[in-house]
Length: 247
Image (cartoon, rainbow, N blue to C red; front, side, top):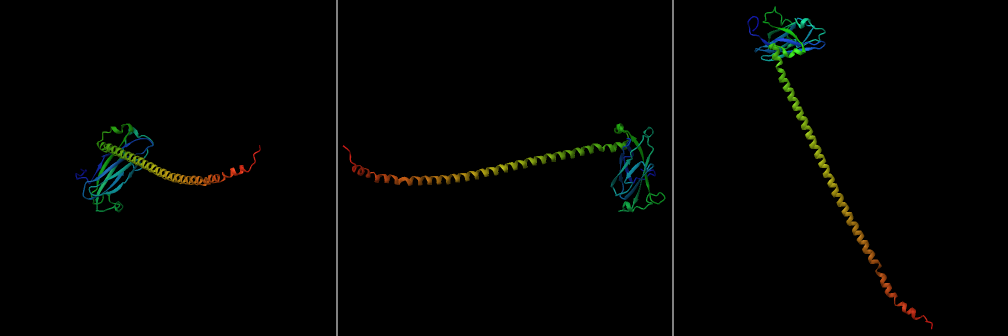
């Protein structure tokens, strides 16, 4: 409910901004703006210390029953505030705009209180917390935002598990590919050995045939020699008969 008792056009979570305060280090806090109506609602964020904070987007239009996230960044501080107390405040204004209105089409007097439109306002306080006490906050709005951390951690862990599974599957496929390559290489080597053995066998057969043919030729050529010896043997007696033997 708003200050005038009407239903709020938008709701903001969390209901306060909390920043982890560290010197020379920026910090941020996200605000979720939810449109609770069937109308297009424009919003604008204002702060009492515009030089200390960076707001994006500081103006926008939320469609019916939709939501938007606003990131508020605390610039890197140079000194600690007294007692770590912060007096800064934020103001979130909202009003109904015509359908299909773009943020660039908003008139300059959209959030002017002097106009006849209904402009609702939501005030947000700012708190600084030290890094050690970040998890000990008792603010309900901050707790509701911090409760999202386990879900984020589980999502990150799930992504890591999926990545590891993909890596393992890739390694397994690589090993199978290497095995198939080695198996194909061995098959090629076996085929080459068989071809080489066949060629060597054919050469051996041809050499054997040639040797056999040569050996057969060498056996057939000296056969005429005994025939000559047979024909010449009768000549020796006739020669001896013509020789006179001395008494």
